[in-house]
Amino acid sequence: MLSQLLGRPVHDETGLTGEYDFKLEWTPDSEPAGGQSIFTALNDQLGLRLEPAKGPVQVYVVEKIQHPSEN
Image 1 (cartoon, rainbow, N blue to C red):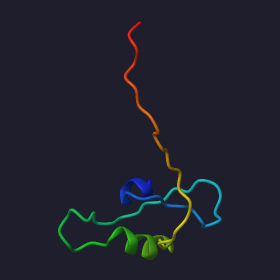
Image 2 (image 1 turned 60 degrees about the horizontal axis):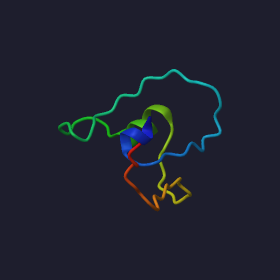
Image 3 (image 1 turned 120 degrees about the vertical axis):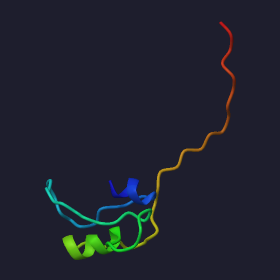
Image 4 (image 1 turned 30 degrees about the vertical axis):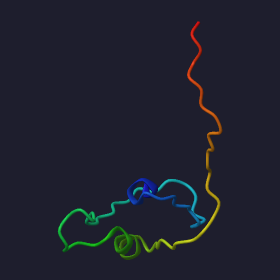
């Protein structure tokens, strides 16, 4: 879900297993100031932090495109 919110890949390196039920409250960037950002909320409310890093990502390369043939 974080990948969708942030628009970039997020890799889980917590080492935690299983499923957890929690409530995270933050103010989206599109709303006026006054609340916590997603980064601050993760740290303050869950004790987690996001750290930027470089790593491998899956990439698809399209080498050729053709119109379908008529049958």
